[in-house]
Length: 245
Image (cartoon, rainbow, N blue to C red; front, side, top):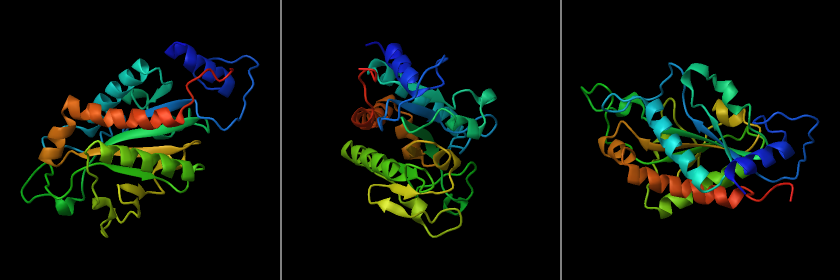
């Protein structure tokens, strides 16, 4: 079954907004049929600034573009969110979520200003490096979100990546409870996580104010290893056969 046919079939069954439905019925069978892939930040909110002046949003876009290319090759149905900065409101990014979709938001990380090296602008640090994953207990599918995040963290560790722990620091803006030792944190108030109507995970791919980490995430080979880990988790959770079968 082709990628587009898979997505259209899932849309018909699930009342997904990708297609127009005339008298279609929705069936809540507890299955996951597609992913909502979100490129974090939008509009003039470019997110973090890398040590060399780059915009986080550009890093996010590049990663999501390569991820969705892989999803199409692997025939994994997805919907793209957060890819058009002039037409993107934060709350709108979760309108296509639901119990039948995994919402994944991709970002690149920074640190609190107290960890920036002295006399550097933009911020530069050696303090933190590595990925971090976030879930919200205010998400209606918190348990599943946590399970997916833990699986993804384990896959990233097996792929040779290390997680950062700086989000657990007891400082203003941080102090996030760490849910497992592989880098999954609780962040209840992240809107894209708590407003999602299905399981939702946010992945910080690397710390772009760290020169070495920024160089890693700027490597296509390294990004491909991250994508491999994401794909393995999605394949375990997304039902790939025709939902009408």
